Each structure stands twice: as C-alpha cells, then as structure tokens.
Image (cartoon, rainbow over the protein chains, first blue to last red):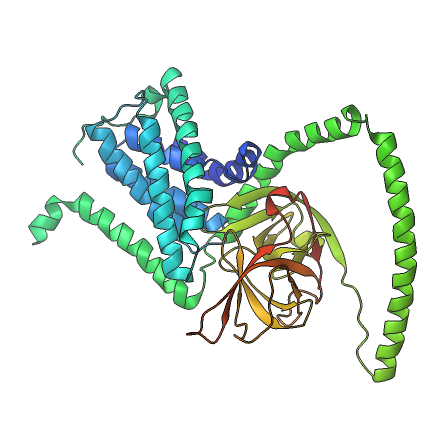
Length: 170
Length: 268
C-alpha cells in the first residue's frame, strides 16, 4: 500500500476514532475503526505488511490513549497478521463471510486485550466485560468493516491501494 | 542456523517486533508509562478533532438554539423557580461558610479557598478496551497543567494527563492507571479507588470497616490532586472473604462519562 495512504490513516485514526466514531456510538459502544482498517489491509496486502501496519497503527493509538505503549500495537499487529494469512488463503474483499471473520477477530482482540490488562494491571472483570462490551463491539466492528470493504470494492480503491499481488512470497 | 534465519527473515523480523512490543509492555509495568511522542500526537489529533467536531457543534447549536424552542417558556418557569430555591440555599450556605471560616480562624486552622477553574468542552472520547480518556478544547495556554482535577457539577471525571496549548488529555477515573484517595461520606472510612475500565474498585478497606451498598464515596483530598468532598462513585457491591484482610468493594462513578459534554478543570 502506498506510504501516503498509511500516513493519512496514521494521522486521522485518533481524531476520527475519538470524535467521529463517538457520534456513531450505540449504548456507549463505538465501532473500532482501526480494527476494520487493519483487516482490510490484511486482505489487500501481504501478511507481514498487515502485521507491521497493525503494530504501527496500534502504537499510534497507544500514544494517544492513557494505556501502556504497545498494548494495542501488539493486539492489532496479531489481527493484521491473521487477516493477511487468511486473505491469502481464503477470503476476498467482496465475500460476505468477512462479517464472521471481522466479528471473530474483534472478539479475539478483545479477549487478548483483556488478558493483557489482567496480566499488567491485575484483577479485571473478564466475564462482565466480555458480554457487555466485547461482543457488542465485535458485532459493530463486523458491520462497519463489511460496509468499509464494500465501499473499497465499489469505488475500486483496490487498484489504487494494492502495491503488490496477494500471492507474493511471505 | 544463520542460513535458516536468513531464509525465513520476514518471519523472524515479525517475531522480533512482537517480542519487542511485549518487552516494552513489561518494562512499563515496572517503570511507569513511557511518554514517547505524546505531545506531538496530541497536538495533531487535537487540531483535527476540533475541525471534525466543529460542524457537529454548529448543528447542535442551531437545533438547540433555534429549532427546539417549543418548551422554552415552560423550561424558563421551571428554571426561575430553581433559581429562587438556589438563592435561598446559597444564602444559608454563605452563612455557614462565614461561620466555618470564623471557627477555623478561632481554632487556628488554615482558611480554605475554593480553587479557580476553567470550563472546557469535550472534543474527543477514547474508550478502547484498555484505557479511558477524554480530550478537551482548553490547554496549557489557559493555565491547565498535568495532574489538575477535572470535574462536572455531578462529580469527579478524572485528572489531566497531558496539556499542550489549546488541548489537554484527561485520564478518566475508570482508567486502569487512575487512583483516587476517597472516603465513605457516611462514616469517613478511607480507601483508594482504582479504575477497572467499566467500574471502579475500592482498595485497602479493612475487613471490619462498615461499607454498604449505596454508600457515596467522596474525595478525601489526601492525594493532593482532588479537593476534598467531591462525589466520586457509589458503592454497588461489597464482598468479604475471610482469607483476606480487606473487603472487595465495587463502585460505579457518579458521572456518566458517555454523556459528558463540558468539564471544569480546577486550577491549582
């Protein structure tokens, strides 16, 4: 993907997530834009590129938040890597099954984050957070991600963004 | 061995990056959060957030100021009644303040002055799975500094984490990195309120302390950040385990963070 696109995404991710996504919040649950973007990168680029992009975008989010540096970088990097591997093997950008994968990835990211929070901050309420926050957020991420992917597909952004073919050596 | 690594260099590079991130996390647990690039990132994101929220604020202003004037007269009457009631309460409070000051002087106590404050508008809310912060549209040029208390008329929101000209980041009291010294308003039992993302936990409360569901927790002023007596959270669950010397107390913040639009920063 072109470095200019990455620069714009890195610059806009915090303000858009913090202010624009707030207006899309339902019951305090906001869609995770970064997750959807990294998933899309995973489908469009190589797994390594998606993993590094995930780490970078996560680190930017960590700097902008109050959490420990590396928290989101670590989890989003893993999401990018998995999406990249999956994208090479199974998926394409127009497939409706993207919703299920986005939902699963978002849920997995939530569980991993909760485990890291447990590890680094001590006791955290896992089960209440799982049902009250992680599952609704994963559903929201799935819906937003599918809309985002359809927009990318319809407007033929694919050709603009793709730098290398998906079957390039990992 | 080296040949194997060279053959799979992308895989090992990624592994190294993940290991580096995990190492970074473990280091911060011991030494505290790194403040790497925080100010430039806040400057850029704060500027863009202002641009993004400006049309939303304008639309809200037009809708609330011009279109939704249907109940204005009724609202005006209700507010006038409330102003009259508050005037009476204020007169009584003033008498109590004067009496309190006189008694403090008689006892040789230091006279208390209410802190100066700055009203700020919320321009961004970050509620990721691991942290809770707000961005406000006032910063260091308005006298705001790190660790100043941020409140609303209902109670405490949190404290300033970073302040730059025109923007500041507020760490909410439900963030895992937030700790506030509080006391139970009813019986003055003290403890530390820690953020647990969706709620807070009152720590270091003796097993024998009298804590009940519904108790209001207020700032004790012992942490040097928050003035004493401001509402913080309400106790929702108390569990006693005989194996430990402390009680497990769960509390919910009195302020609904998702509904906060303006906040008051207390200047030191």
